[in-house]
Amino acid sequence: MPSSSSALIIAIDGPAGSGKSTTARRVAERLGYLYLDTGAMYRAVALGVLEGGYEDPEAVPEAFLETLYVDAMPGEAGMRTLLNGRDVSEAIREPAVSAMASRVAVLPAVRTRLVEAQRRIARRQLDLGRGVVLDGRDIGTVVFPDADVKVFLVADLDVRARRRRQEWLDRGQPRSLAEVRAELQERDARDRSRAVAPLRQADDAVVLDTSGLSIDEQVEAVLRLVAERNLSTPVK
Image 1: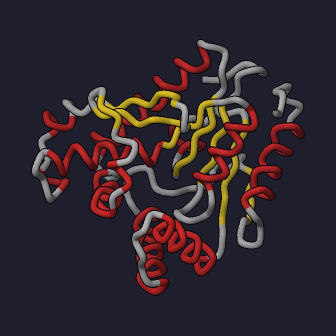
Image 2 (image 1 turned 30 degrees about the vertical axis):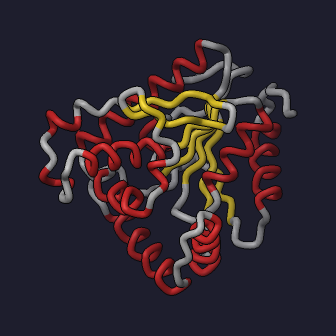
Image 3 (image 1 turned 90 degrees about the vertical axis):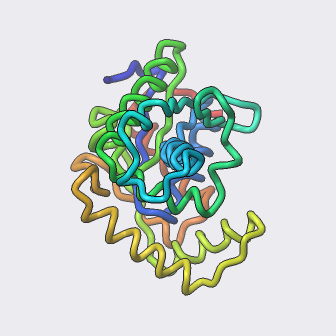
């Protein structure tokens, strides 16, 4: 789904802790776009699964998954994630939900429904003349292979572990660096090897190593990519 020059689709992919979510959010703010956190959408499904009393995602009936309607809307504090019309933006940040999200994400039925939802939300924004910035692991390869700008963020594992640990600390949930590092290492292996939508760099994506970059530098680098492609979008 190609977009017009004034309403672009920007895809930012990369492993956990590479800085893609914060970068995508800030880029969207600078461009006046909607930031679509696709990871939050998977967490919303995970929350629904947990609230349904399921501990094993493989045991969840597809009929139950079909009752979980995930949407995203702009809010005063950024994107709000909705599950069956209920704002679950805060509830989905709990550790148990995050852990379940990586497990439900490999279910083909979940992937299919959420890819459709992501495209639906983006189309809605483009119809309003507003661009979209999405971050995830398969945005530039599966969800929007014809995105106007594709960026693949990478970073050293130790750097990513420190960043992710700080995120937990900021939420008042201290965790050891070793625990977070091991979790990221396991997740990297799972994300790259899974049969359904593995983490993969798009052939035409620009690789940006964020190991030594601040968030401001990451944001400016992405905005330069937009400008270098002569895409006439005003930067605030």
